[in-house]
Image 1 (cartoon, rainbow over the protein chains, first blue to last red):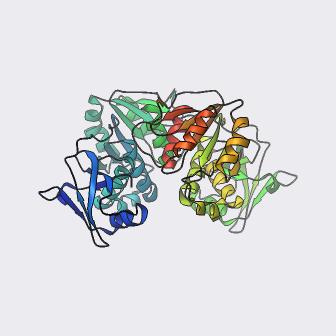
Image 2: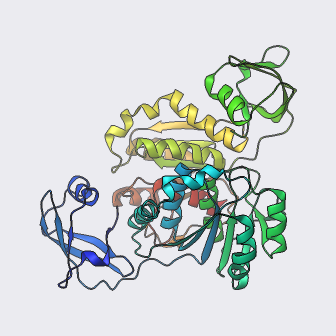
Image 3: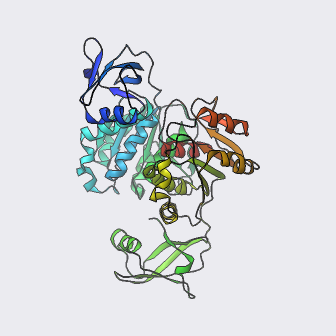
Length: 237
Length: 237
């Protein structure tokens, strides 16, 4: 928690923020060993980042005096990430990784090799997803929540969503055995598609290439989804 | 488990391998739904990779007929990674990530901001470390175990080990605020140093730079150690 991240509705009219949740209080008290008058790096969701004074603290609440925060959050990556829905524990970690890396647009997609049961996971509840995003933002001192779309059918994605996503973006399909290596230091808007464990099936690859995606590979090593996504984003940007 | 990884002493004189451990048996039976006469991708530690026939299977053992394996494992990264000892759970995941990415030489280092208690963690037991390496190798179809050194003092590392490590390697110190961005597509032998959560202290940075390391940064985002290591290795190689 490198940032005390506040929701706008936690600020009163005098820009005093009162935190009462156990998670942040415990972190302030146990990890930061916070004392009144200490200053902390704070951010407000959708706004900026800056320093704020801790005006009051006990085991029930912490009160910060939050000035207008003028420092912008770190820049976002110019990418829309389309990720075949990973298994729940992998999803949780991957959401934190990609948020910390600066992804702001994410589609979770059903594909042939995604287990249908994964769509019933409690990890997909909006509150759970938001919590992982918050952890990623706190890690990296960011204030802008990613936007997420759940797409429970591959064909509807292909027909209804992909054409618009590719309109102003370079589409990159990450898949083992594709002819070209992952490009480096891309700065144009990019659509990055990453398959499930076991990969896209050949029909899916064919359709994505037909739609205008370029196939790219990460080399001979088979990586777990969370490692592969971090590796791809790091090579690309 | 993309590879059935065998230890050399699991092979008999006729190159039949008998597995009796619950982990691999369960994976074969439950995930692969293995049947006698199926073939699997197998590897032998320190040797090659290839296909082997499953000659017998019940809930106590699996027997493979393993030909001489001539396909080499995927190439290693030309890097020696020096990592400030992370907290135990992060260590476990990081060992798997870096093994899957192809790191073959790893030093775990004490620095000022490493909590001393981490050195007492059961995760540092050689059997535990080996198990994480094995999981990373199985993921990425590799057969070459990384070599690991534990270095419980920063000053002994600086004085006794670093000069030799830098002799034939380009030293890169990853630290926030360094003037240069992480270089890309390096192919020379590299020594990569990554600090703990909270970073190296200024004195440590100064000494590492004096010893001949170049300071590099990953941009404005503060990443968790496991994400940062994957990001650095992916940008570098």
